[in-house]
Length: 306
Image (cartoon, rainbow, N blue to C red):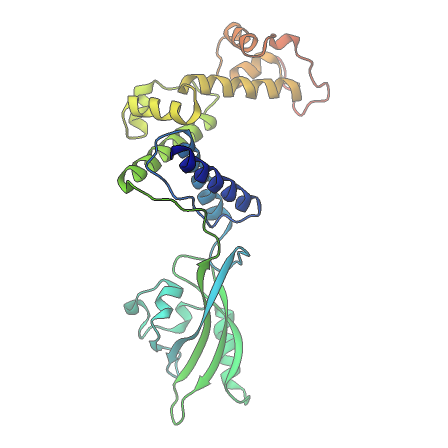
C-alpha cells in the first residue's frame, strides 16, 4: 500500500515539474500525512512554484496556463458625474473593493486617467450607444487590468451603464490528488519549510560574515536552536555550519578561477580572517590548495595585494 502511495506522489511530482517547465506555476501538489523525503520534496517544489508565480504573474497579465469563465453581466451604474450608484456583486470579486468602498465613489478612483478621458470622449460625441471600448481598471491590490466594456444609457435617464466582461479564474490543471489526512501537520511542515528557506537565504546573503551561533540564529528567526538545526538538516542533509562553510568555499573557488583578485583578498571576502585556515579548508574540500588552481589571466577584477 505504501509503495502505491509513493508511486502516486512521484507521479504528482513529475506532473508538477513538467508544468513548471512549461511556465505553469499555478498549481500545488496536495500534501499527505507522511513525514519522509518525498514529502519534504513536495513542500519545497510547492514553495518554489509559489515564489516564482508571485514574482512574475499578477492580475492584468495573461497566464496561458489558466482558463477563464467569462461573466457577461458584471455591471456598473453611474450617474452623469461618473459617481458609482450601483453594481453587480461580481465587481467586488473582480476589483477587490468592498461595497462601502465603491458606492457613491467617483469612477476615477478605479480606472486610469486615460480610460476616464476615453469614456468621457465617447459620451461627448454624437456616436450612438451602446458602444464598446477597452477601459483600464485599477484593482485594489494589483496592477491595472484592461477590460472590454459596453457603454449604454437607460431610457429617459441620465444614468450610464457599463457592462464588463471580466475573467474569473479557473485552473485547468490539478495534479494527481490523494487523501490529505492531517491538515494541522501539513501546516506545521510548511511553516518549518519556510523557516528553513529564510535561514538558507540569510546564509547565502552573509557568506562574507562570521556565522552567528545557533542560539543567535534561533533568536533571529523566532524559534529554538533544536528546531532550527533539525529542520535544516532534514531539508538539506547537512548541518547549518557545514552548509555555510561549503558555500563560501565554492564561492571562493569561483572567484579564484574567474578573477585575478589576490588570494588573501578572496579569503577575507569569503569570511576567512586567517588565510592559513582558508587554505586548509579549501584543500580539504577540493583536494588541492588555492595556489595550485589555474587562474584566469584576463579575469573580471584585479585588486592590488593588501
